[in-house]
Image (cartoon, rainbow, N blue to C red; front, top):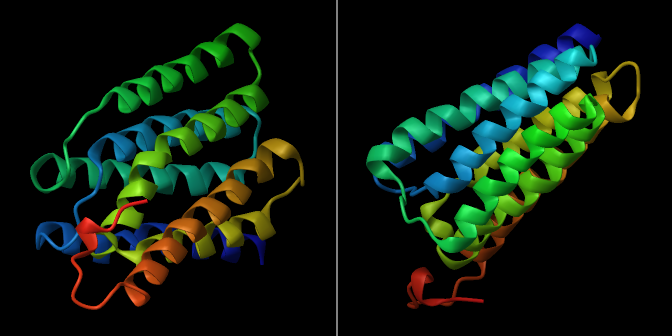
Length: 199
């Protein structure tokens, strides 16, 4: 059962990116490149940390997530939103801080928690983008990521913080993205371009 859940998690995580990449190639979705690059860096750090702590279910999830985010970065180089602002620079610096903390404290748990914290900060530009321009994002990809992370959470064993922290975060973060996109699309003011509506 545990193996099946891990496979389901990986399939949902990797398979869910397909419609996103198709939408990016068509110009329908415009990912914030800097956020996806930050996510790639942080999921690689998280994957390495969970492997070091022998949390295999989370390791597989984060390996799949790293592959997914990297693929968006590659597509985003040509089709995405490549704008880089001061806040984005702060996120990148924070990501490097996470790596430093791991080496200084030699603790996979600190690396995981630091990566999650920095990941959440780095997600802010993309979440704002989802709010302002919901038709430039793909809700199904984030929904699949949330469900995939939930499957990993159920499969986590032993049930310790390094094993469950990232899956819990990904359930909540991906679910938030999907909810914002779906809600903003549903309740968009008729006749008003989404890009004109701001916080």
